[in-house]
Length: 326
Ligand code: PBG
Image (cartoon, rainbow, N blue to C red):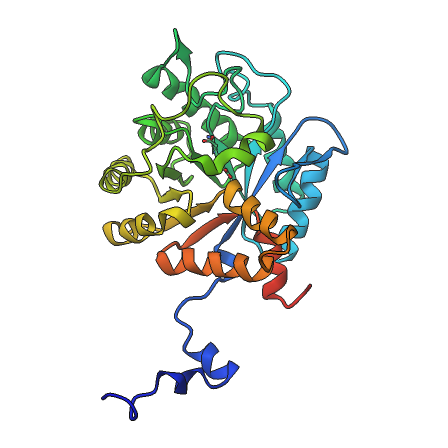
């Protein structure tokens, strides 16, 4: 029925009506809050390119985790910012290392909060690549057992989910085998399946001190031009028994999130990465954008594209906003 009988504005007439017909929501339970863990005590180092983001020592991390849990956030994701790195990755797989200590402390203090960990070597290797390197080349297959033992170290410390972000071929299967053999067949894997070689990771590399010291990550992360390849990566990870697949970054890849949602029947995650966070903050600080509005709009857009779960540095800010605080 054309105008004047049909009027789309009828259902926009009041806040209650608009709320009733909202197609997409952003429940606090869908958010995962990424945090950076550093050695020491009482450490709360601001990350200059990421306002309100800090490198936290384990004692400070516990306070942050408690706050997040009190705000209704379901899960945190831990990245390590170690003070020692080597060329083997054995520090990443140390059962008493920084991340296992952090897992134990948070699970003890805030048992209701789910803890997920990043499984990748870039923070732990001197050259900052995500895999072992020999003569300038990434050693894919040699990296897999190191990733698997890193995941095992986290499992033994009580982690609730592990999340490989390295983009080596075969890592999901390698981690699954190791976890199953070690008595952790119940532990889910969230795989960074379609992870693009992105300029939007810039601020993270400051936060995690993980910038590659030579070359770039284009030999293992995906070409931003490719969509069909993302589906191949996702289906491969599903075949290797990933429990959740992830697309990363989020905002420039909404079409990929949408296609991945249609191509799979397991939950889909999206990572609103550091550069997405920092550019909204920077524009806000210049008075060019309203931060809370673009924060909510960007996250609703990611949900509308098909993300069930979103990793975002805005998690606490969103949780407060959803409660009407601030
Ligand atoms: C590294 C890793 C990166 C991010 C998560 N895990 C950076 C990279 O690949 O260089 C980026 C997260 C962000 O930018 O917020 N394995």
